[in-house]
Image (tube, rainbow, N blue to C red; front, top):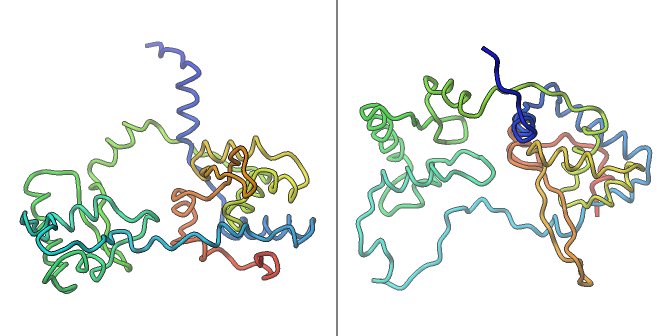
Length: 253
């Protein structure tokens, strides 16, 4: 049977699903140090705006409401529903949610009682034949799909191919990782060569994301580049603070 020839869109989507392989944290740190050694270290100060970003760990915080106006006062919401919803949404940085954090979302539920609630949820998933499960790691709980449907997920997303990042791409990735919020112009200045094509490639591979901000003096918004959750997952990081340390002078404002 002759398979139909792929069009440009299908080829592009297949490329987007490439899995980056054989890039380590040591490679990333070494690339950053190498670029820094070739250029002025003072140019490597991270943008102040990147330091102003608040820690979003308090994901599920809500503003207090007067008594009698909260939806929880009008409708009974079970601990199972609250925990299931929290784990389904997940943490924006793909972190696990601890018993303490989950318990803080509910009234009169202690952290040690969270495990019992999760056991009931997992039992209900199994009895209903659902493909969801709640698993525990050293930091807390997260919701995933069961192993027996992993092949279905792969079929849905297509065959995943491995792809290697070349040295130039690793350099650009390291600059953004160590200086989140950096602009394309700054990347180019620090590398000493044009880098827009590499930045676009890393965005397409979902290793970087773009945040457009208006300059202080006004005018057209400028793209600023940040590492993505996929970047953290790829390198096994909880946050950018876990990156290998380089010479302190390179990361100071």
